[in-house]
Every structure is written in C-alpha cells, then in structure tokens.
Image (cartoon, rainbow, N blue to C red):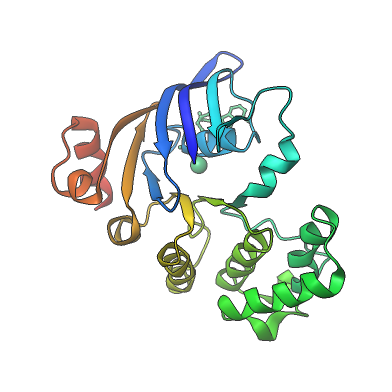
Length: 240
Ligand code: ADP
Ligand code: MG
C-alpha cells in the first residue's frame, strides 16, 4: 500500500531523515517507536506531504506522492491523520468537525455526511456529544472525535502521531481501545507511540527509529524479546 524508497529530509542543515526504506502492506498495523528527535513525526509527515521529502520516493498505491502529476488532495483523502494535540476546530461542534471535509472535499450532502458522522460517533462511543464543542470534551473524548473525523473520509490508511501522549493517564485506555478495534477491522495503520503494551499487542510490525534511520524492525516478538541492535536494547531498557 505504501512504499518508501531512500527517503531523506533536511531542515536547512539538519539532516533529519537519512534514508528510510520500508513497505507497508494493506491491513498492516505498523508501530513506530524511538527516542524523541529521531525523526518519527517527520517520517509520518513526509508520507502525506505535510513535509516535502528532500530526496527519495514515497509511493502510495503505486503513485509517487512527489510527482508533479499527482493530485495531493486526492492523496490526502486516502490518508487520515490523528495528531497528539487533536487539532479539532474549536469554533465548530463535533458534528461540524466530522462533516466538514466530507462536505467540502468529497462534495457529500450535509444529510449523508451527518448520517455517517452519527454512525462513527456511535463507533467511538460518543453519540451523545454530536452538538458539544471541543472545549466541553475531555482529552480522551477529543481524541476519539479526531479519530471519527479521520474515518469520515473513508481513508485507506490512518497515520497516528502519539495519539495518547497529551492525555491524562486515565484516558489513554479509551483511545487505545478505539484504535485496537480499528486494527481488528483491518484498517491499515501507522502508529507512532510510546505505549509499548499497545505496540506488543496490536502491532504486526515494530519499526525502531534512531537518528533518522530505521535502526531495526521486526515482529513485536523480535523487537521486544530478541532485539539485535544495541540502540534498540538501550531504548527499550529505558521505556519498558
Ligand atoms: P520525533 O517525532 O521522533 O520526536 P521529529 O521528527 O519531530 O522527531 O524531529 C526530528 C528533528 O527534526 C528534531 O531535531 C526537530 O527539531 C527537527 N524538526 C522537525 N520538524 C522541523 C521543522 N519543521 N523545522 C525545523 N526542524 C524540524
Ligand atoms: Mg514526534
């Protein structure tokens, strides 16, 4: 579904991604772990062109995202993104947050988009919050709304960048539960997280990033029980 060939990203003189190579299959849940500053967010953001790669290639369903013939908006429709800070529109209620892109981008009718939104709200357990505003919601609720908003576009893949890092501990579980259920329904997901329990249980593959490269990748069993790279071992000794 996604193929990454020798992806590099530089900010001015800082070389942040130094040649990332990987392939993400349809239905796969890939968990990206690694120290702060290792380039995890930049990697995700290059996949949907929130950052423009300096070198290399990203193919999404065989289409090169950086080719000048590629319609970047069409591409982004296929790729949902969920951020640490939720990024809900504060002046819109929940229903408006979820239906905005389907109406504007997909030209869906208001009625159809609201039906879909209500079903998604049920799915994330928040049907009673349709007319609430973001500032009336807890962090966990906001993040479940952000996930519903991503799902409203029927994406082929969802990128999660530390979706539970801004949450109070008691709210982490409710968000991970929603993500778990998406994974079990076959959604393709790339998840940057420090939740090692989730990584072990839900990840099909773990990518360990360090200083702008994939230092090691493999099954959760391999990475957590039998890591080969000293950097992986050192990182895991700090977080487990
Ligand atoms: P991680 O998500 O693993 O913590 P990031 O991808 O956010 O790492 O950042 C990797 C490095 O790139 C950091 O040193 C960060 O300061 C730098 N960086 C990230 N985004 C930008 C940007 N837009 N402009 C300049 N430097 C950036
Ligand atoms: Mg980050």
